[in-house]
Structures are given as C-alpha cells and as structure tokens.
Image 1: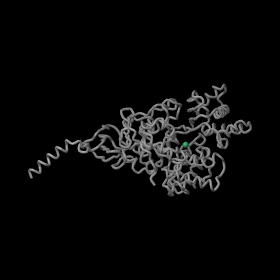
Image 2: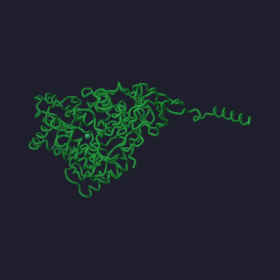
Image 3: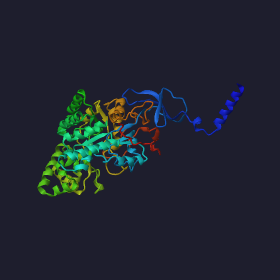
Image 4: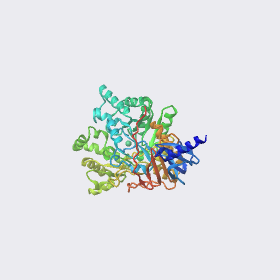
Amino acid sequence: MRKFTITTILASVLFSLAPSPKAQSPAYDLVLKNGRIIDGSGSPWYRADLAIRGDAIVKIAPSITESAARTLDAEGLIISPGFIDIHTHARRGIFQVPTAENYVRQGVTTLIEGPDGSSPVPLKPFLDKLEALPKSVNFGSFIGQGTVRATVIGNANRNPTAEELEKMRGLVEQGMKDGAFGLSSGLFYVPGTFTPTDEVIELARVAGRFGGIYISHMRDEAAGILDSVKETIAIGERGGLPTQVTHHKVIGPANWGKSVDTLRLIDEARARGVDATIDQYPYTASSTSIQAALLPAWAQEGGRAETLKRLKDPTVRSKIKAETIRIIKNERGGGDPKNIVIAGCDWDKTLAGKNLAEVVRMRGMEPTIENAAEAALWIVESGGCSGIFHAINEADLERILKHPATMIGSDGEIPIFGQEHPHPRSYGTFSRVLAVYVRERHTLALEDAVRKMSSFPAQRLGLLDRGTLRPGMKADIVVFDPNRVRDAATFVRPHQYAEGTSAVIVNGQVVFERGAMTAARPGKVLYKRQ
Ligand SMILES: [Zn+2]
C-alpha cells in the first residue's frame, strides 16, 4: 500500500515535470465575467459568466471559477450573440479590408452576401477564394436570380425559352449545392425587372428543395409597393419556401404611410401559414446607382451601350427624361433634387457628397426638377455614379422596425476608410438601432433589438449553431456598453466607426478589443446545411 502511494506520487511528480500541455492547460480559453447576458432569444437579460473553449461556448453559469487562459471583465456591459447581417454587399471590400472593421465595430460577426438578385455565378470559385482569405468575420452568400438570368439570356426584356429556363434552374441548383442560403432577387433592377413572377417561382422552387429561402428587393417600393409585397408573398407561397421582403421601405412622399398595409399583408400571409418575414436598415435614405434609381427600366435594357444609344436619340431621350422627372418628383427624389446625393463616381471623385441641386448649379443652371433630370442623364452618360436618396418617412421606418417579423440587415458594404461618400448604413446600422431606437426612442426593448440581429436571422438562414448564447453554440459574441453604444457615421460624414463596442469574439477568438482590431482572423465561410 505504502509502496503504491510512493510510486503514485513519484509518477505524478514525473508527470508534472514532463512537458505535458494537457496537464497544465486551464479549464477554459476565455471567460467573460460579471456581464449581463442577452441570449438572443428575446428573453430578458440575466447576470452570468460565460466560458469559451476552442470555437464554442461551453458553460454559462452565475459564477465560473475554474482556471481560464484569459478572463475579460464585462462589468456593466451586455454580452450578446454576435450580430448576423442577412443583407450585405460585402464582396465590395472584403478582399481589400478582410477585417471588415466597419462591421466588427458594430458587433457584426457574420456577413451574408448575394442579395438583390446579384451574386457571383457560379458561386463556388468565389467561396473558395474567400476560404483562402484570412478574415475576421464569417461570410455566406445567396445565389442571385438577376445574375443567373443575365448569365443565360443577358439583359434582354423577354421570356426565356424552355431550354433557357432549364439552364437557369440548373445554375440555381448548382448555387445551392455550393452552399447558398437561398435565392435572392432584385426585381427592381435590370434584368430582374424583366422576369415574370412565374419564372421567379420556378427558380424559387429549386432553392426551396435545398432548404433555402427567397429574399427579394421588390419590383416596386414606391407606388406599386402593395402589389410587390403580394408578389413576394405569392413567390413564397407558390414556390413552397420561406420568403422575405428585404430592406423594407416605402419610397416617395405620395406613398408614405403604406407600411400599414404592407405589414397587414405580411400578417395575413403569416396567419394563413405563409412563412413571410422582413428585414430593414434604420435610415430614411436608400442607396443604389443613379442609373438604376432614376432611369426607367426599359431605358436600361441590353446594358450600358444600349442605354447610351437611346440617350443619343432626341425623341427617346425626351421620353426617358420625362420618366426621370416623374421619379425625382414622386419616388427616389422625394420631390426635391436636394434629396439626391452623389455617393461616388469613378470618373469624377469631386462629385462625391454633392447633392443633385448642387450638381445642377455647378453646371450653370437653376436647380429645378427638370434640370436635375438633365443632370442625372449627364451623369449616366459620363459613366454613372452611386447615389443616396432621401425619400423614406420616419413613421414608416419605426412601424416596420417594431413588427415582430422584422430583422435588421444593413444593405451595406465594406468601404475603404475615407474613400468616396457611402451611405452611413455600412458603418452604423446595428449600433444605430441600439442607440436611437432602443435607448433614445424606446421603439424596441434592448432584448428584442438583439433578437432581430442574432437568433432571428440565424433561424432564417438555418444557422443552428449561431445567433444564441448557449453551451454548444459557436462563440460569436459581442460585448457592448448599452449606455454608450452609438452610430457615429452620418450622411454628411459617413466615414466614422460606431462606438460603444468593447469586444467582439468570432469562433472563440477575440477580433476586436480596447478600441482596435486584433491580429486574429478566425472568420469562416458558412454554407447552407442541407
Ligand atoms: Zn436592394
């Protein structure tokens, strides 16, 4: 007995002297202590410590006392799931700025690309390239109906032949097999706008068979918005898959207030069993190209060369201009050229930040709507610009935000810091919801806002291991100060990072703390699980 004990002691002494990392390694890699947990489900916060090992949350308890390689004190702070942005154009920038700093500083840990009908087709080479890129955030994609159609029949305004339809089905199927989260459409844009509803349904069915969702920048967000919501619902209902109105907004003063009816349509659809949802960014201005926003779709058929040809023909040009005048009056111009701001132009960087009235004056004319239309055509002819359009009403925004089936999505991108004049949504969306619509206006409870940024989009995408704080889930986490969190980017000065985020953790590794990005690049490419 005695001998055995000595042997055991000797063995354990020898063992502890041996370089065995296992024997010495702490119980956890990282423990967040003393914070308030908002788990993402919408339930009220509670006080607990949270432990991480590897890339996963392994324990949440009132007090965690076992050893940890690192401890972060979250006293006075909120610990919540990292935010999931279901609508981004982040392929603009991810390869130049793989930290996605503008998003991480808002607490975003997952970016989903391929919205508005526009994605790389085929998807696989793009996702492979992303796999090879060390990055701070997770990244996934939809497959875009517009790009699929353009690949098969170009930008022509006609129906596909049977073979062409089959080819498009094949491209969507391949996209889903490559890991897309569903089918996106941009029926407002060329060539999406030339697509009959039935054709979209045919492709949506394919995405649905693979467990994907349908997400749509609708055909018309202005006068025809009710028909567009009906169409979006019908595509989900007849296509047999969940459907989502993306960046829901009501454009143009003449249409303000219609969100009462759009939300009623969503409620009625849900009541009869159609899985219809919404996402939204918290700004009263939208952003897209001047050409897409201010020219009628028919003028853009066939691509840029065709558009320029039409603008050279005086008769056709005056027809286009009449439509542009109408759009500035009633739709994205909100009735005043001042509401249209240039975000960026490759051919003249000095135009960024100027509104259309200023551009008109620069050209020696009075800033009437008619002259503004002429300036818009000049911009298109000169090479085009991206624009920001102030034509959304705050009451509609808040009404949509409050709806339980609305989640948050930025519709943003990854800007090169200081370059061009982007929409502030890329820098501020998530922090703005927490600052303005939770803390200042009490439009949402903090827990509900977090739900709209985490568990809700995760559920929508089928990301079953993210979006909620529970043992076993991937450790995508944001720690923020609910009293200090705020968006700093404005329409006048967009290049300003959000504030109030203390730490951001992606797949168990700290990517942001003490006001700076770390060297960690733990972001993963995410694929739809079938
Ligand atoms: Zn869009």
